[in-house]
Image: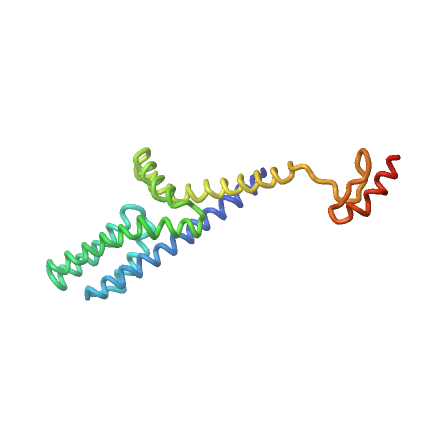
Amino acid sequence: MQFSRHVQITGRALRDWFVAQCYDSVCVGLMWWLGLAWLHVPWAPFWAVLAAIFQFIPHFGPVLTFVGPAFAAIIGGGLELFLWVLGLYGLIIVLDGLLLQPLIMRRTARVPIWASLLVPILLSMMIGFWGVLLAAPLLAVIFAYRALARKRAQEAARRAQPRQTPPGRTITGGVLLGPVDNAANLPRAEARRG
């Protein structure tokens, strides 16, 4: 395979990952906006836009997202509102990490849900922060190459299948009879042999 083809496959996979990340960011921003507006936290749309932007930063982004609304909740409504914002933060983190991100990655970048859930954990244990940072784009590239390999294997299997001689063509030992004109061609085929 040529280098330009590798660049094209990798570029398409990374583009699909970026699109999935953008969808995820928009979904997280909307969840923050709806939750903060429902809790009457000051500047809810501003915190939601920041949440969408910070979603691109693994691990630290969600924590940075929580700081602003938590501070606004303490100032605007006291400890009770802060606890509600903390609960909203936990709910969004769980929904995003276990449901939204894997589903969006599956639909956009064709990464299976099990891989979206397990590989970031395994890579974070092996190489720390860089494992979490690189897990999603790396998965998108790996599964793009896997899809290409499957497609090539299917094409090779199709080419390797023996081709059947069409009816009416001469073969070794006579003429191949078609299913429709078996009765009509039978005497002729026997006559040719004799």
